[in-house]
Amino acid sequence: MSGAIKKTTGLTGLAVAINPHHTLGVLYGKILRVLQKMPEDAAYRRYTEQIIKERADVLSATSDVEQVEKKINCGQVEELIVQAENELLLSRKMLSWKPWEPLMKQAPASQWVWPPAK
Image 1 (cartoon, rainbow, N blue to C red):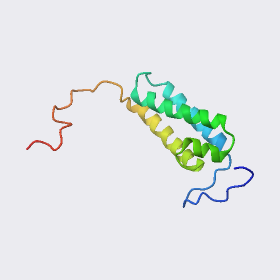
Image 2 (spheres, one colour):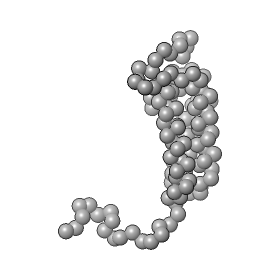
Image 3 (cartoon, rainbow, N blue to C red):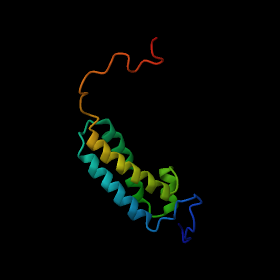
Image 4 (cartoon, rainbow, N blue to C red):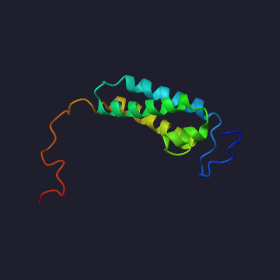
């Protein structure tokens, strides 16, 4: 942070990250490894992989925390860490749910019609 040490995030319950570059790098690596286990044509993998790779590239190209926050533009690094932790949990769940597999039985024709017919 350009010589200054961040004392607070200004967000209740969110502590200042001690080593945000390392933490984000580890989380992004874990997410990418989980995504590699999914089929290449799975929509969740394609789009999540794109976002995580873009963020990882910003992280590796930028040493200043403020610049990382500005370039990613999704909050403070502490918030990015929370987002990455949540994405890691979701990606592991998606791997077990396998939403890319075909349905066990065909969905009713009116399933996606709103408002429902009377």
